[in-house]
Length: 257
Image (tube, rainbow, N blue to C red; front, side, top):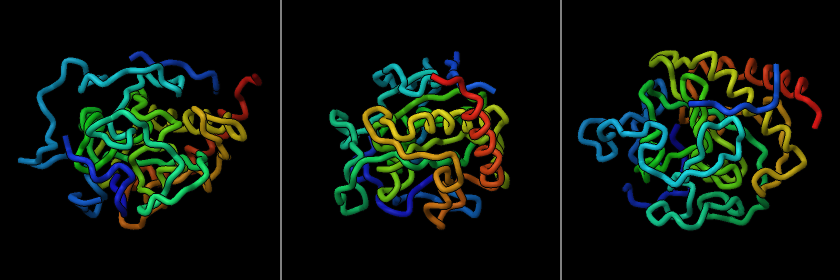
């Protein structure tokens, strides 16, 4: 889950019905051998509060119509902004790296992460958490998706060398160590997301040019960007080829528009 470098959104204080897509059939982290956990430890200021009244928007974030049309909800997570303590200017894709050098915005990678825990993490991703972590998409056990950061905006997920060019998904684990498995519904939804992104190849998605082919060069895991993490865990890493093959099938069978 966590990065090998200072994320774009660092230097900030801490603070179901599914829709159908018409494609048919980092400082302060705890590193373990299994990867990096999101779970807060006792006494951690990021520890979750009492169960929220609305589990699909636990922090009462501004809601918007999600860009990904299979997502259940779009939420304006503060880590999708240049300063999450004052979330007014969205984090653009025109800079990269810890030195924030200029780049030409593009989306050309889909990066798969896992949460490292089976407990729901939407509350964690909905705030200025001290790990500066928030993906484009959050994927629950039932395959439902919450869009936390607009696709046109940099996620705060993989590190400054990768956020600017990627969409990132955090997959909630269905089991813990050692496998960190996910459900079949989640595997299917990962493929659906990838196939959806491929429909924008050569076009713009949410205002950003896309250069994306469904293959293992463009669909990668967090570990492939940084050897210091086991994310997204053994199970998901073993299934990436299957996810890509299913995404290719969905894309081929999609109705021509």
